[in-house]
Length: 477
Image (cartoon, rainbow, N blue to C red; front, side, top):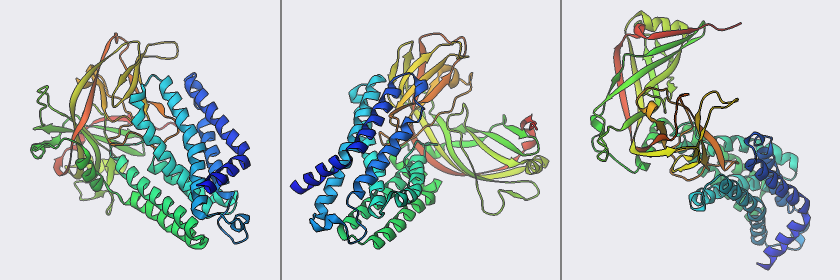
């Protein structure tokens, strides 16, 4: 323990200027986050990432592991004490400053300490396991900054697709799998490098494990994600098998002249479960589709064994959305078509109503929401929501959207059970609901919770796509 503290204090003295720069960047980051939102994107989040990366690499390189002529080998340092000192340094000057910064920003945004505590703790765990430890692993098998920069490029790519915000409700499954594999790989490399100091083997281990992490993420298909989702959602309904699906007759085809056609085929549901508390049918959403369509002449799209993928999470009516080339769309119109698809459907319920006026309101599962009136720079009133450490997990609708009188808006939605996602900014505006100019305060907002999830293989025949309502948009030169 004394040796650990000795190494830690030596590192603090040696890297005092780097520590000062990192703390200054963190303070600047907080300042811009709590001032006018126009100053939030001046580059301080990126500077904070760079400062944290540089400080992590520098502290590990204080006692480089590769080679046999390092001064620290003659002390001699216990490698367990050396590793413990580096971990203590990362906790003190990477995790702790970010924790304080996040706490200041979220409290200023109006969240209570009890609201933000789970996400705050989870986000710092993600910061340590998916940022600090992987960078330390890279530094442990490199000897200088140039090598560390080159080795860090694949890591930054992996972080972007394994720990960031969700692009769709099921993406959290892939993110979680890649994050777990990455954290396990980084920890294994750090322990192996400090335990054996066999740099070549440590580098080989790092390459193999991180390639495996990418393969795990890429290899997760929709079926596996759907199976995980079905087990995670807390409510399991016995009558889901009685839910019927068919195509509606209000489909559209948006044609980009000479390029492609975006086809939208609404799905009608029958036999939806009814919520006992409200006697209202649950709201279905198709959150992902893998489909293949056949024209009347027998040609398939996509050709060979490919699949189209579409999403329609927050649309006013569930639908299949996909693109086909313009010449293939002409074939689809020539005669009856058929379509096979795997549908991943989520049923939303447990409706709750919130009243929003000019004051900010905390909506659990969404964030801190407020009404933005019309102004010189705002052409229509809106509801703006700041999320807390993660993408919202609930659907947010107003009465006009729920009744189909107003198109729904899109925002990032995630069914993840975790209270945080890996990110720099603890609170971001991810929900912006445009309202009718005549909207009056107070506004009634409805939240819907994902209650059940199921997967269904469907096959539709005799589709008359020549009846779609067409919109043509010529491409400007």
